[in-house]
Image (cartoon, rainbow over all chains, first blue to last red; front, side, top):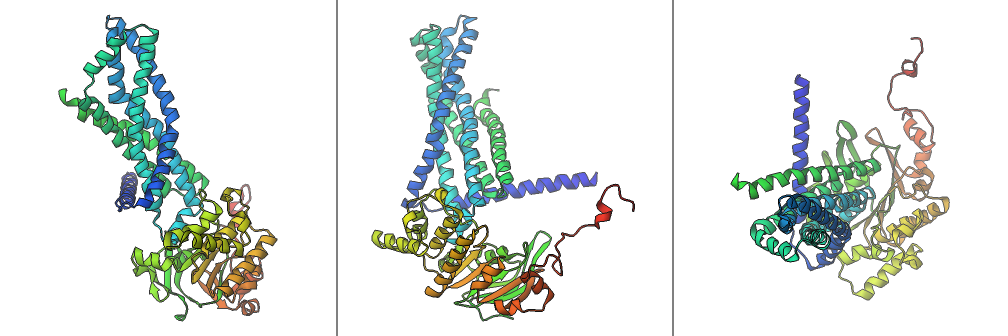
Length: 260
Length: 268
C-alpha cells in the first residue's frame, strides 16, 4: 500500500517536473526581442503549418457543413422549422465544431509533424550543432513554429466556419429547397459577433496555444531514437486531443454556461 | 595536475543517474596539436567532448577553455567562446533544409558581417579545401555519408576557429573516405594552426594523425602519451585496447550471473 502511494507520488512529481520544464521551454522561446531577420522563418512556418493544413480543413469543413445541413433539416422539418437550419448550422459551427474539429485536425496534421521534425533534428544533432554555433535552438527553431501555430489555427477556424456554412447551404438550400433568404436571414439574426464569433476565436487561440506547446515540447524533449520520436509523436496527438476536448468543456462552461 | 593546455579538465566528475561516467578526471589538451581521445565504447568519449563544448556541465570540477571555466560563463560569453571553436558531429548534423553552400555559409551569415562576394568566396574556398566545390548546390539528402562529413568539416572550419572538436570522424566510412578525412584533418590542423580534439575508437586511423592520445576507461584517464609510446606500453589495459584483445582488464562481458546459473534445464 505504501509502495503504491509512493509510486503515485513519484509519478505525480515527474509530471509536475515535466510541466515545469515545458513551461520554462516556452517562456525561454517566446520572450525574446523580435528581429526583422526572424520574419522569413515565421513566413516559412506559416506556410508549412498553416497553408499546408488548408486542404484537409476545407474538405472536412465542407462535409461537416453538409452533414449539419442534412441533420438540421431532418430534425427541424419534423416541427416545420426547417427555415431555422441556417442559424443551427452557423451556431453549431462557430461556437463548437469549427474550433474543436479544426483543432483536432490541426493536432493530427501539423502538431505531429512539428514533433517529428524537431525530434529528428535532435536525433541528427542539428539542435546541438545550432547550440555550438552560438544560436539558441529555442529562439531559432521553437519560437517561429509556436507563433506560426498561434496565427494559423484561428485563421483556419474562421475558414472552417465559412466553408462549413456554405456546405450547409449546399445541402439545405440547393438540394433540399430551404429558402435561401431564410437561411442567411435567420443566421444573421441569431449569430452574435461578440458572444458567438469572438468566443469561438478565443477557443481557437487557446487550442492553438495548447497544441503548439505540447507538440514543440514533445519534440524538444523526446528520446532521440526512432522509437522515442514515434512515441513523442503519438503523445502529441493524444495529449493535444484530450487537452482540446477538456478545455472546450471548461471554456464552453465559462462562455455560455452563465444561464445555468 | 595538468594545467598547461588550451583545454584543461580538472577533477571533473560526471554522472548519468547512478552511473559514474567520470570520477576526478584530469587531463590537458595542448595547443596546436591533434589530440585523440580514445577508449572502449561507453567510456564517455563523446560526453567529454560535450563537456568541452559546454553542452554538458560537470557535476564536480572544472573544464577550462582558454583559461576560462565554462560553467561560470553566461550564455553570451559562452557563445563568444563557441565562435572560437568548431565541431564536427558524428552524424555531420547538416541542416537538412539548406543546400551545401548555405550550410557552410550558415555560421558566417550568423556571426560575421561579410559582403555577399566575400561570403561567396569564403564558402567556395572552404568547399574547395574538402573537394566539394562542385557539390555546392546539392541538398544534404543527395550526399553520400563521406561527402556529408566533408561538408560538415568545411562548415566547422568556416569561421576559422582555434579549436576543432571531431566526434568519431571515421565511424562508418569506407577506406577511401577515411583516408580523405585523415588527410583533411591533418592538413587543416597544420595549415590553420588549429588545436584538434578527435574522439575515435578507430585506433590505426586516429594514431596515424594524432600527436598525443588520451586513453579513457573506468571513468578516468588510463594513459596520456604519444601514439608510439602507447603502442609500446606494457600496461595491461592500454595493451588490451591498443591491440584489440577481446578480454582482459577491460571486460568484454556486461556484468551478469554465471552462464550455468542462467541457462534453463541445467542441474545446479
